[in-house]
Length: 148
Image (cartoon, rainbow, N blue to C red):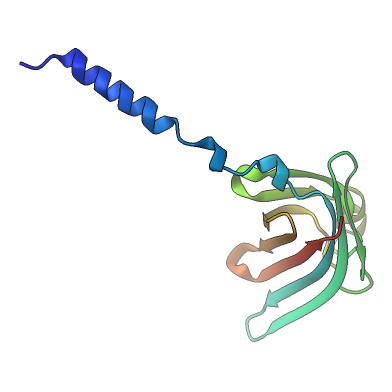
């Protein structure tokens, strides 16, 4: 009969080896946090039962951990100038934007506000933010480049 202690030690050695992967290949998630000033294109697409409506604008998004976020640029027709706090959830690539002031003051405004939970991707230069509503009838796309 084989010694169970030998098998246990072998199992333990394999477990430790498997869990001790090379951590140096993983990027530093803090280095890829989307903060700074970003310029680019915003697009809203609304899928209606018989047609698809879309509109776009050029915007600037400023994101700072200490002061929050702010949308400026072409905010006359499509996108509302928004500002407030944000939380980046890097584990699942989402950002929660909380626009207390302009979103609540506008009520059911015709213009889009940056408010709620959005998915994002960021490579250090390009920031892409997206939102898809229930049943994909509304799509919001932000394609932005970092300027500082």
